[in-house]
Length: 124
Image: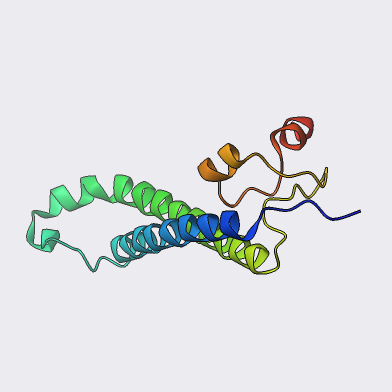
């Protein structure tokens, strides 16, 4: 019995989609990292001391949120890179639970998906 998989032209299409998402994700990650390191500081150091004290609390929360976003973005980039490996191995789009093909529509929306909708719903 032959293994069910996407044909090479489908895989090529998904590869282009993933590479485009990867470029966008890396740009977003760079922006987040620059924000965290204050490389994009707009000279607020010379504002009044009382203003800086008021901003301290919200700045901490903001930095924590940005750090979490950066971590999520790194995980997303890793997931996209893993999807590219699956494309090279010609195992891309095969549900890791059911062994069936994941619907193209799902993969276009979530190109790093490893579960079919059926398997994903069964997890919940």
